[in-house]
Amino acid sequence: MRKIGRRGFIGATSALLTMAALPLPAAAQNALPDFYEEIEKRTFRYFWETVDRRTGMAPDRWPSKSPCSIAAVGFALTCYAVGVERGWCSRVEARDLTLTTLRTFWDLPQGPQPNGVAGNKGFFYHFLDMRTGLRFKQSELSTVDTTLLFFGVLFAGQYYDADDPVEAEIRKLADSLYARADWIWFQAGRKAISMGWHPEKGFISRDWDGYNEGMGVFILGLGAPERPLDPKSWEAWTAPYPRFWRGEGASRHLAFGPMLGHEYSHLWIDFRGIKDAPMREAGLDYFENSRRAAYADRAYCAANPMGWKGYSEDCWGLSACDGPGVNVGKQRFAGYAARGPVGQPDGFDDGTLAPMGALGCLPFAPEIVIPCAQTLIQRHGEKLFGQYGFFDSFNPTANWYDTDYIGIDQGPILAMAANYRNDFVWSRMRRVPAVRRGLELAGFRGGWLEERL
Image (cartoon, rainbow, N blue to C red; front, side, top):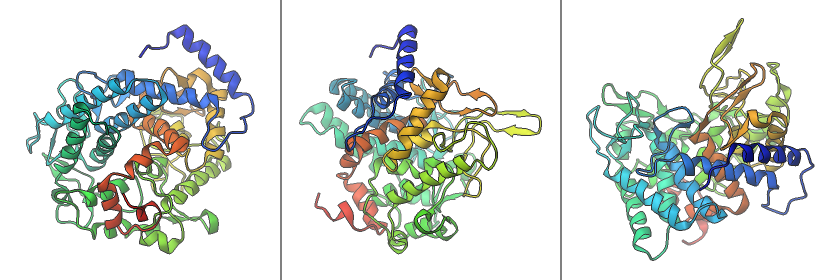
């Protein structure tokens, strides 16, 4: 796909700024204003143009040199299909790149040794060398990042459904990659599942539990066709819920400060109308929970208790992201860190906002996300909105703007817009047997789960 030249890039951005200054049109259901389509197109190009075509390895970030992020690969596999449907690439191009990616991950060596492998027991290391595909430095064998990779793999297996030998191989490899993972091993005799494993030190002591981005780990672990998690593990995941509730009445929700915890699993799983036991008791579903979390983030930024520059009801979005990484007087501005409203689980606020934090909530609350996206472009222009869409983060108080894009923050922006438009990702993932099986074993009932496959 042709890259945008610098002159064309500046002209396009100027036009966007003019467009963003205009009132939003009265949009039909699931429609988005023209400026948002430009956000989507540029975000798609991040994945399409930075991936290594020889292997399908997607970088953790760009333009800074970085290893491959296996989670970014999962987002990329999903975003290629969005590009096909929107006419930004051909199905053949996306299909062939997807097959290359799945072949690479299937063929990469696995084993318990610390070097010369890409993973162990069917899971993969968080970061892989972009050239060799092998473990990068001392990164951990990651359950959540492997889960995000598997979501993209399973989506590809569902999307490429043609009676064609290439697409048939994609489906076979998708099933095989997912089935190879030994979830029982990663449970390590515990009720929950460990966050990761190092060959030098063993399992990470911290488990996934409570409410955060680890929800999908349990759903795919429960739904696995071979060596799945014990169904009772969902009880270990939900056991800490009582201390995660925040708000009262219509604002009451399971809280987790960084917005990614309300977005990542939701990108592939349609939680509308389906409820597990805790949500049946609470009288809402996880989709509504994420909507309330988006409003809570916005309300916190509008109140701005820390007095940072730039926060408002149309400029919000706290999540894990890059940061200035400097000290100014007595004020500490963190580097890469998980950020969220102070007072919520994992809450930390140093004035740094991530566009993904807001834009990844588009299906939950378009009425507050679209004005935020518009404000970010209008107010910050090319310092924040570049060749591949929004740079990862910015901090007006420190007068700092990131110069990198990060794959795991780019993915939710594009895929959630596709879900908002026409349930693009959700409609296909609802047909994945493992997703349905995992949800049912976790005790989810109602909604689309009552429909026949």
